[in-house]
Image 1: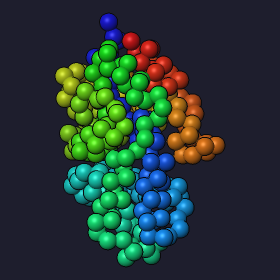
Image 2: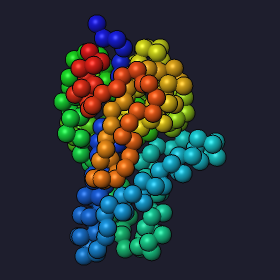
Image 3: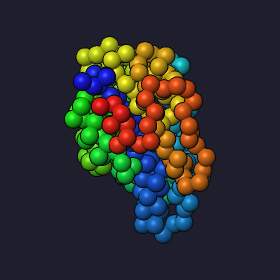
Amino acid sequence: MARYGAAIFDVFGTVVDWRSGVATEVSRMYEAKGLDVDAEAFADEWRGEYQPAMNKIRSGNRGYVALDTLHRENLEVVLTRRDQLGLFSNDELAELNHAWEKLPPWEDAPQGLADLKQVMPVAPCSNGSIALMTRLARFGGLSWDCVVGAEIAQGYKPDPKVYQRSAAALGFAPDEVVMVATHNNDLAAARDAGLATAYFPRPDELGVGVKTELVPAQDWDVIAKNMIDLAQKLA
């Protein structure tokens, strides 16, 4: 019998390679216009607006809106800063914003999810919307059982209600659900919210050779090498 009733996952960075996926779409869009761009730097800059935008909602200064909306607003912030907003039509901006739905899964992710799904329900607990997570799953062949996370909680991690309401939506108490992430701060928030925790590293999340979170910061309940190893340990 599995130790936990369900596993919920961080997605951006843990399950999918957001940086290369966004960079691919940025490069394609710029090339179509005959423009040069450092696509990886653009992806980093776009992602850099992620936390500040969500902080306005976490602080109560703005009501909840889906991450799709924040991504679009952040895209316009980046292009305005680069004095390039006027180079793209509204339709082109919308198309580029869909880059976040076209992120390649890490090599071990589809199989690891499929393996774990044989043991317990699996679902994303992401700041991404239900629509975003659904399209991303179809793009990458990710076999989630359902989608929980920010939208059902009407808030953004690391707000405890995101973890707790995700567990409740699956019919479990927090301590019956394991939160899986490669980011130690995500796991710390999940543990504080009462969930079990599981960690594995993604050393190339920010680019090959770029130092990132390579080791567990706490004694998480499960520590694995990758998602396939995680599935074996959770079973």
